[in-house]
Length: 128
Image 1 (tube, rainbow, N blue to C red):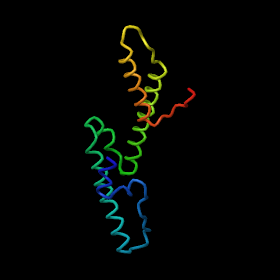
Image 2: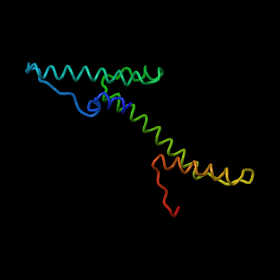
Image 3: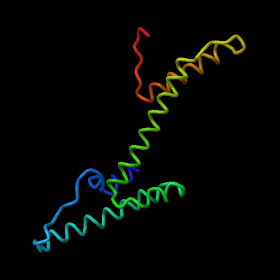
């Protein structure tokens, strides 16, 4: 999704705040910038919602801003990623060689666990 928003040149809307205009100020340029910002925020929010599963759409569709929506989804994703890291570490710590399988198949299984650890960016001390 981040790649898609980058190709639309709209990732700045994920981090920057909306330009503010005072009520006493009737500068046409500021009003045009705020209107353009609101339009792009609306479009990008709906791009994100469109990519979600139908069951998640109802949950996140009530969020008004693209920035808030993006933070909520990112937070959810990071929580799942931490869970994956814990699962892989558990696999590593619980790995045991057994007599009922060939040594080569067990080595291959262990290599897959090590590869998953490397992909997740988890580093294991050489001494360990």
